[in-house]
Image 1 (cartoon, rainbow, N blue to C red):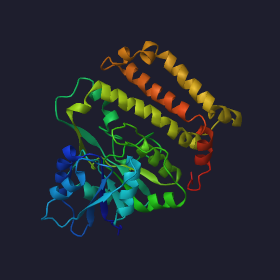
Image 2: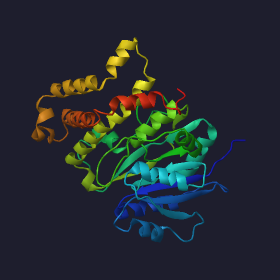
Image 3: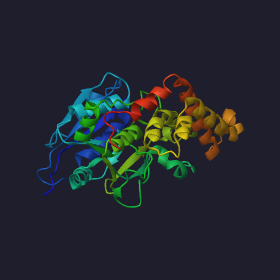
Image 4: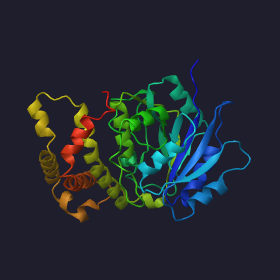
Length: 341
């Protein structure tokens, strides 16, 4: 028989009072098979709005599933995520953002997927948007930037077919995480830090997992709704998101270099130079002309070139900041003791 692990659901919170209520309501309505242990852990990451007490007060007193609140003083979603795993008592850790409304059997689906193959390190689901107000006409075109959509056409192994995974509505095998950390894994990207729209911590973890020999799996039945408040459906907000995504690519470069096969050693050495990378990025920026240098042009709603310019500007800025550490980061990941692939 398959071994069924229990599930610890971790919610990382920063000033989440306005979003947390419906998220907890959907978790409280979970239907699971008898005997499946699970819990909810709310990680308060430097909130100032009473998120911790709100979570405790909002959790129903008449259900047997426990909810605990822990605090993480170091700002950044990656720090909060690590604290949540450390506090978890179960073998599988589900990651639910404070604006994720999971389906009624989400916890059970997570347990079933992870029990189906002990080599699965991370499993991800599908999502759809739940809007506070009518969405702008451009939303559907750029929905993936909001972690909305599908990771594939059907359930299956996506270890090497997806370049990035979103952390919202995903689950990780605690054993896989512990092995990574025990062998020296430390993330470069910290994710959202307060109101700062940095990103990439989930993509970095996915890349590290597959380099460590774990599978990534997509299960569309792990469905959730991603709540979209009106304030997020703003072109300026999406521009900031795209710039954050561009900046995150610099931290992810080393993972791509480590697994890429080059035709020659010389080609590898040239491609991985910081100077070459920033020159390539500046050349791409130049190709976008006025969109790359005019804030007014980039403010034109719905223009894909404007968002690409933001993405490249974010990458350029991050590359410049990493000029003294880029090469050492590449070496560190290539020679990581946790690497198996």
